[in-house]
Length: 350
Image (tube, one colour):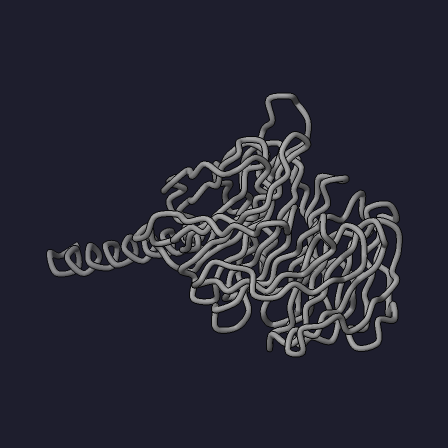
């Protein structure tokens, strides 16, 4: 073999080696996608705290003490603010909201609700100037002036145990689940009054609304069903089975997928909204280890603004599962506090 031929062969081999290295790098990237960016805020019921965690690194940014029994989390539309409802526990009745600056620039502040006890479900209205909050103990939906930190209007549902709340994308209507009454209240927020009440079933709790506002999905604690309601008429369009205990419901922004946590079966279901059939059922029992040997108990659900990722609290494990919705894979788990329940995610990174 001449020197020229040997040189050409060496160059060819080097090119081949570089190509194989590049392909291996692509394969690794495809098998282990980069974690999404953002900041998670989890309400830790047992620890009486709120955890603020960077999603991409898993780093705890802050652990903020709360009143006993923090339950739900709402994130403002601009991602700047997280609000944690101070529901309380058996020994202490809560009546306040904790406001957290996701960027860390401002100190936490408290909004006192006075006689409106057991605040629970929350949603920011478009523009982030008002917050909708349920007061379970007083059967009210509150409109809270967020900047002023005070209750602006209280709207009675007349139904016992007004618990969770969702709002239409335009902010015109709110829908609540009333656990003891087995009903859904539709609140006309523009007119600040109760619009109507839909009777659904015994002990309904979790609730989600499709982005187009046409359907409201409600989780039945005792029936183990998810009810699909016509948002305008309140009629039950369908019932979805196969759950141990459907607990919380979230929709992707494109309205194609509903994410339902099921602590009764230690699973999370990704449901195709068009067909109302499960697209994937994720077994969460291996997602985190629990010292007691029990399951992790997937509970709170929130979805990123781009619709790519679902975040589910694993209450018994003090973790948050980060789920890629397209592949139905648990990408990682984030460490939060004991008894993690409600959760919110901001697109901002500290």
